[in-house]
Image (cartoon, rainbow, N blue to C red):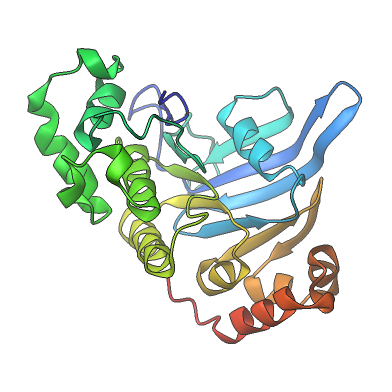
Length: 272
């Protein structure tokens, strides 16, 4: 039920120096003769939000799964510290786009935390000593009041903040977000991005975000990567969104999204 909420741990704090940059080099995923993506080279810096945009089928979600080691891939993944030396494998947090569960089940937010932290089925979890830890995790995402709420009673934004809180326990060095606020209302969107800004500032966290919301990307991202089976463009929001290739891929000259992008560029004051 909760298998998609995961962390990949460094072997110990001694083995993993402070992560400064994740280097994705010559990444490719091929299934038989089908190329999902290829020639992906990106540097992900700590303290920054890197947004990955592109059309459906561009390989964005598969890239995150490749980073997690969930799909076979070609290429190298290097984790380096401020001196350019390789570190051990960092802690990686992951928030999926959706969590599939029975909305009529009595499972609470506390239940899902106990299941994930104890790695036992929900119905076998009763360790109330975890409650202070769960409250602290939820407080990071301004959701401590949801601890006893049923999952099925949560709004879309509330559920995604709970999933984010799970991904932040233990605190990761690298956070992967696969369209985490798809379908969330504007207030939920703003709060989610405020939380990401806090994580970058307070924890110096590296964040990779897949998003189709170009306005929010333009406002909040430090780096934008445009993918379409490979990396088409990589730069600041201004650089990527002003490039004709971006407008061509999204068909922006034809209508609605063009004005949306123009609006995003005008607001590009980095609210984060």
